[in-house]
Length: 201
Image (cartoon, rainbow, N blue to C red; front, side, top):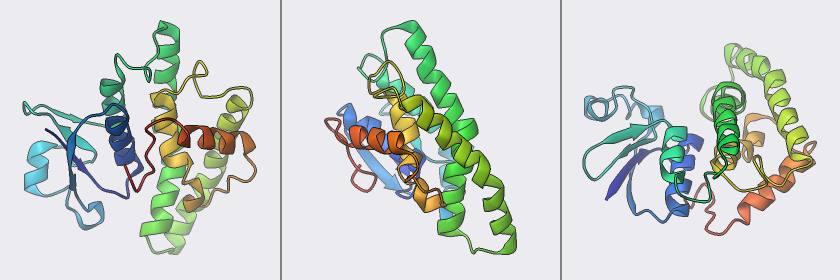
């Protein structure tokens, strides 16, 4: 059986759990507390020297980490990965953008607000992420204003990757009230057959 090392508070871990659920894969979840250094132990570093979750161990001992790489692997030959080559490139474009533009502002703000004392230093970090985070949401809002999903009007791993932290953006201090297209997109994703909420995946 697949073994997923994860922390339930992680949006990146949620991506991995959701694609495994959607594709009907049986897996054993091993919860690690990232706040207490459980991904930095010698035992876990022997599995993933980068010391990050999610980390997936296959039945034959192969190891795959990085949430979007896990999404890609399990989406192949499914409806979550487009047939058209340009649409596939667009999916990858969103996956890269999510990691380099969206997550550093939306996800990091959520982590700081939920798991760090709001010192002056932390407040400054949050302030620095506010405008880039709002810009990321505005870009998504504009894109989704004329679309059902992010790519080719079909639910793909691009939607999974962006949903993970967008739907909890308010936990990072980003109100979604001014983004009606994003709100409708979130509702559509939550109506996808087989969908599991973050706490249930």
